[in-house]
Length: 341
Image (cartoon, rainbow, N blue to C red; front, side, top):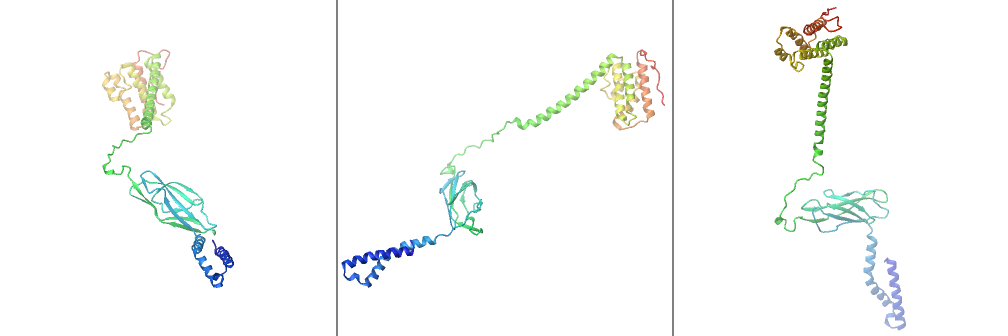
C-alpha cells in the first residue's frame, strides 16, 4: 500500500463520518473535530503503511542456505538449498561459481528460478559443516557481484547405532575379485607356450635335417656321402667369401657324421676331447688335429690361411679314402689328393 492509497482511504473514511455527523448535527461537525477525527482514523493504518513501505524497500539481492535435515549417517546424501533473490536485470552465468563447499563432496546440482539445490555426500565423521557460502552473479551491467550467507551444519550419526561403543563389529572379509584368477597368469602362460613352441620347432627342424642326412647316408655308403658333402661345401665358396666360421662348422659336422657312421659312437654330439677317448687306431687319430683346428675357428675366431684350409680338406678326403671299404663305383678321382694351386 502506497502513501497515496493510504491518503485516499483516510479521506473516504473521513467523508463518510462527516456526512454521518452532518445529518445528525451536533458538536462533531465543527472543523477542529474533523481534523481530530482524521488523525484518530489514521493511527490504526500506520503499521500497514509502514509494512508496505518496508516491503517496497526490501528489493535488494539476498541469499539464504538451509539443509533438508538436521542429522544424517555417514554415507547418506543431504540436500543444501540456496534460496536467492537477484536485482532486476541480474542473472547467473552458465555455471554459477559457489564457494564455501570446498571441504564437502558434491554429487549433483539443480538450478531453479529462485533456488539452487545441491546434493552433498556425508563422507566423514565428526563435524559436517559448510563454510560461509558465496554465490557469484552478473548484474545488469555485466559486472560480477557476490551473494553471501552464513554456514550451515548438521550432526553426523554413527552407523553403529546410538551406542557405538557397545556395537559388535563383524570381521572384515577379503576383497572378492571381479575377474577370473587365470586372467592374471594368462600372459605368463602365453609366453611359456610360445617359448615351448619355439623349442619344439627347433627340435623338429633339427631331427628333420638329421633324418634327411641319415636318409642320404642310407642311400649312399658313408664314404660316398661324406665325399659328396665336402665337394658341395667347397662349391659354395663360403671360406672365399669371408665366412670361415660357417665353413668350418659344416666341415667339422661332416667329419663327425662320418666318424659316427663308421665307428658306431655318436661323434656328432661329442666334444673333441670325448671323441679323442673313443679313438683307438692311429689312423683315426690323424683326424684329431683337423677337429681341433675347426674348434679354434668356431669358438676362438681363429682364421686359417687358404693354404691351411686346403691342406685340411685334403687330409679329410685322404682319411675318407683310407677308411672306405673300396673304390667308389664310377669315381675315377678316388685316392687322388687335391693339390694346392
